[in-house]
Length: 288
Length: 80
Image (cartoon, rainbow over all chains, first blue to last red; front, side, top):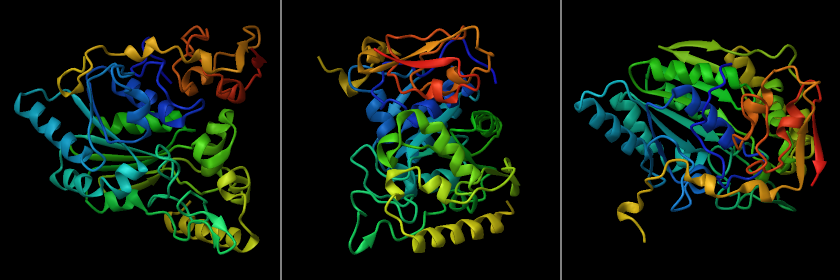
């Protein structure tokens, strides 16, 4: 992988030690290069990188409200196009809350209109910035502050919303999933998404030390375990053609992934069996 | 004074904030053991490892990802 001389996300930002979002954004920006405009919805990323009057961004950056990063990115792209600046990459970032819940309508509009932009969702599977509340992307069984485990509850009782497939249903030219633990795969996808003329969407799983409950040094290991157990599947859909981009040599049981995180520690055999069955079905459906 | 629209005209100005003070353990690299895989550069959340694998202690928060992901155990986490 190419290592750039200059990072386009500067240090000094207030991300937690071991933050996966900053790794992902650094890799994405370095892959896109300086000729890029970034848009971000409210979320961890915006809060940690732009505490006024400082910014960690080395490229033009616009922070917008939770629900309209798709709309603003559309406007930026249209404005650049009308000025004939067709060589500028427009990239929007959103967390899972800003993407699968609150920002879904404006994102859906941007995808439907086919703007030439790339949307990257960094999915840490809950609203981490405001104190670990569940989102539509929270997986079954995870405990959060609004789906807490206790006597009457085992935590989140609904499966994760299948956001990449919702985006694929828009018929856009490029949809991909990625993981921060597979940087080469992620960077290739970002470059491909930027090179395509039209809307593209990348859904990146990003382990969160604070919200998932594991040691800060193990962010990448968690991402790897998710992929190795089939809990997170790396694929791309290019012009409607589905392709798995990474196949683990041997798929590990999900317990190896779940047992390492505080958010799943309370799960009993019954729930773990359910999760394993769900993962097996998902893997079978996608052909992993 | 707050600028109109809260525009920040200084890219990368977060560098004023030296996050190295957050650290309790610091990564120390043994260059002899380094195999140039660049994992420490790629995975650093704080862009604090340069191309020569030198660690910038002004910003390193001591998360330990570099040491954990080093395939040749060339990085040790040492208490400050």
